[in-house]
Image (cartoon, rainbow, N blue to C red; front, side, top):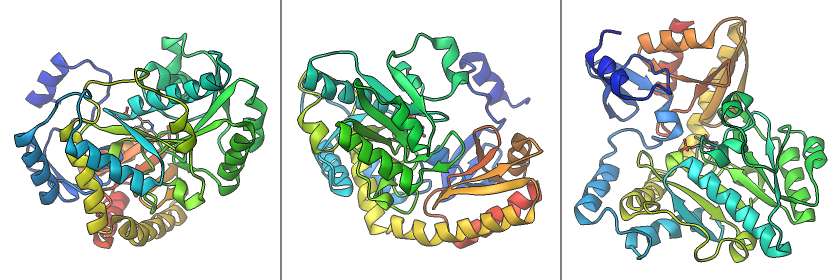
Length: 394
Ligand SMILES: *Cc1c(COP(=O)(O)O)cnc(C)c1O
């Protein structure tokens, strides 16, 4: 670790991450290059962000033009990019209203506030509870952390938000058991990402939705990682036919600029956050919204979702082959281009380090899962190349 950039960075940057000792310089398509010129095949995409790959010319051109025009004016005014981005989010989701944030965790904060306000509008009380899932991940700010079912992240920061109850993912009875007269929302990831790549079963998601409808509880689906085409649907819930009352987006929605969103269905939009209830200085500024708007255009033009279905099926097949071939690979989980291989009997971190040596970027999820979240533009040849480099790392 004698790299001068790394030493300098560690002198100045708060050490909240154990970073890999690599200094990246630039990217091109599905490849990253470090400062020494070494090339890496990227199956992480900056944690499910760079869906269109690196240095996408049409995308970067749009950003450059917007920088020259206007980057920020605050939410006290309208801008064209914000209007266009909002229109495209609404069209793609079929939902009602959107609020742009600067990150995923802020999208969660907004969703939680909207749910509490919805319940407050009904009974005038301010004591409503939220049901979240064990092994979930929703972000690092205190509200999002409060619904993140992972004690390791929570303990030092208590007390957290009161009124949060935890249930087991894919266990409808355990959700039922946590419902009280005060429940205002159930929040879950349509596919759990950080927790180890677990997709909701159809029975579970439909069951939770029915329960929410019956009790007038809002269903919040966190699509920050699994949304934006990654599972072969623009939003993962569309495969289940279960529309949330509130959806959260971030990561790939801007393909590299810091932007997120929470999106409200009709019911939540009509009776929750009103003028003065929520705000952000940067959120939805013309720079990030030009990116969001272009991302939706390029998804359509390049038929990204269809591409994920075909190449994602190939990735699934190849990962299944690996899981069948190696004893230490317990199982493959996931959908489309959000995949995990569960590793047993050996440290997953060792495989990741060797993969990096072999010019392949893969990351982990949970404590023992290899996670694959490549740019959505990967080809079959890239999948073959990944498999070759991964096998060399076993
Ligand atoms: C990454 C992630 C978040 C948090 O997003 P940030 O932009 O890091 O704040 C929330 N939920 C899920 C499912 C995520 O994957």
